[in-house]
Image (cartoon, rainbow, N blue to C red):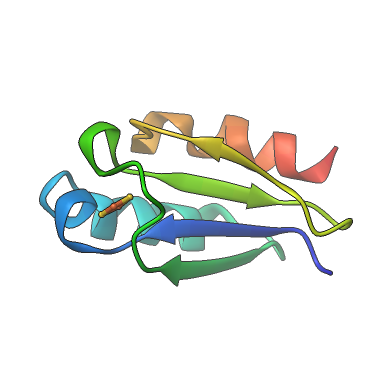
Length: 78
Ligand code: FES
């Protein structure tokens, strides 16, 4: 599986700026796979983001904002 950033675009995260967050990931991705997702189950602490690794697992992040994008993309490469 290709390492992938999954950014929740469901209602609660959407109200907290997840569309702009998804756009920021897409702009900075540099070859990384970025995708929108439905609810990830962390609505109260959104925007919610998952970093999926090559082994099929993932790390969950909450309250992500555009200032976190570069750091998370660096983490995805490791
Ligand atoms: S709406 Fe984003 S985690 Fe539920």
